[in-house]
Amino acid sequence: MECGNFIILLYVFALSIFAGYQVISKVPQLLHTPLMAFTNAISGISLVASLIIAGEDKNLTTSILGAVAVAAATVNVVGGFLITDRMLRMFKRKEGAKHERQ
Image (cartoon, rainbow, N blue to C red; front, side, top):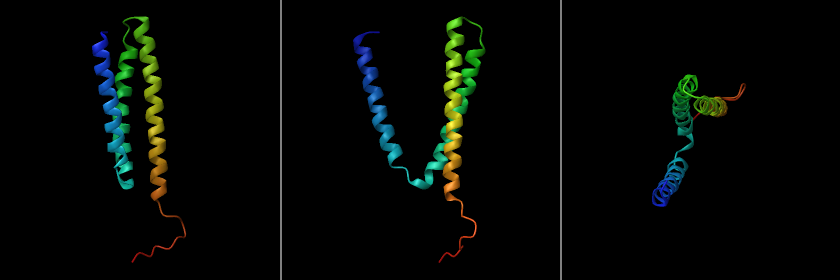
């Protein structure tokens, strides 16, 4: 890879980190759960794609990288669902609490 292309890719990567942080930090707390559900769906798509790549019998390197991608995507999906479940439990009313709202 040429040095110029690497610098451009590094610049785009740095800008995407900054833009992503700015977007996520401005999301209200009530919208975090739907946002997490959407990212879980994207992670599920990447899990399916990595399973397809791991299942192709092209060469050993492709199979190993596909297996690593399956492991990483699985951790991402499971972790996302656990976090979403925890966030949803935070919004549930406790048993025996008064339901007065005025």
